[in-house]
Length: 146
Image (cartoon, rainbow, N blue to C red; front, side, top):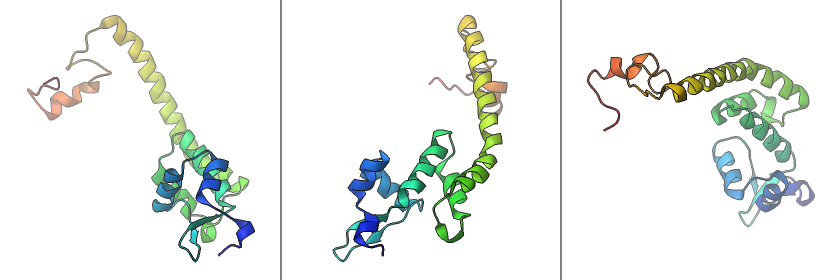
């Protein structure tokens, strides 16, 4: 267990990271961060947890799901804290996914403009509400509005 000077309480980590204590507990439950326990069973986080949290927040900000973030962190030896080189390597994997999301959002934005002018919101033809009439193919005669 880290010594007192090398460990932080959940409140200290929350204050320094900008996250709430319940979020820290959730991340711990999800295997994204780790804590140790004092003799009085109080959580303590290593200072390196702050860098790990910065990594998690940066990845989440670009839309990477927590499961993918955990999988990326699990590739690091001995669960160590990511370095700038780690971020470069791991974020390169997410680059194509981010490009796909940007393209999808751009299409959505462009379709939305057309839909506002059209106003149809047709369940059979609307590219936004029911692309490719997927609902009609899965549920012939179904009504999504009721």
